Length: 440
Image: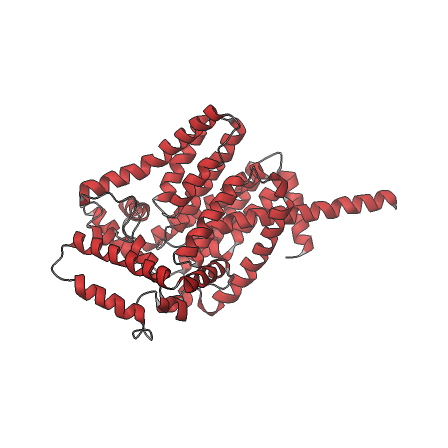
């Protein structure tokens, strides 16, 4: 990025500091145009396999049969099919309508990056952050997809953090309540956020026990409202307590086995992929499916499958702790790697350019974000909720299967800290120039 272009950003941010709607409008216009262009370019069909699962549940909702059976929802989350069903109900069954809706949601998230970064830092950092989020290739592409819940999750968690930091500023409990409700919706979109909730409570300490307890109670009630509603629905439908879905055991197993250790993600997603049918995971998977696949009801099959999946994964941990530890480190490196790990190929999935675009965009952001965190280290208490958020996701994918799209919610904050590093660099240069001029 050229120095002149960056100076133009800084000047524009300063000129807009007295009119916050100007950078918000500029950010939305830029991000919306880019996302709509990709949405119109993508084929009017399901591009990524996960989309078939959500489309099936959305069709069931539109037909008046609710979310369908447990098998349809075992690996699903409720927010995505609900959104798809709502859009199709309003605009008819159009894949373009879905893509345009999520593109708009992605553009709004860019404006929330400005709002949040301004609260955390200053208008210059906020404008740089908003533009970076707007042009970040991962976010542009992701925002045009209805196949994954990450676009809605990024939006709702951006609202959550904006409300949370507004609460820290104004000390109004209703802001904390609505923030907690957004976190609950986030859990129903990406269940990993459930690990973040108890860590967040620890960051609410105000120095006074009673006030902290009140904050914790308000937040807990708000988070639990949407999650409890879905849990009650599951209990009524399936006569079983299920918080979000029932795929954790299987996800744990495919992330902790000798096949993954030897051959990597391509050998376990899905199990028995082409070229990996003669692996221990494939043999164990086929044996399990055949053994419990007949004579059991759907509910009993899923329960048995989950129980044995947990047992198989835990057996790998117990019998080969060294491999488990090495694999955990490898998964962290995969999680933070600039190399995209999507196994599906094709032009609509990024094509041959996917790798270098990812490295050229994410690589500098990661380096600048580290610099930004170091530069702001004295404000660690203020940023504790963000650090807890990053920790929750990072730690979870030491154990479960990491993938690039699971990291994208964290890229949102990497960009904000990277923007702070950029703004501070140019502010420092300007101060040095002014000092040189004064001494010269």
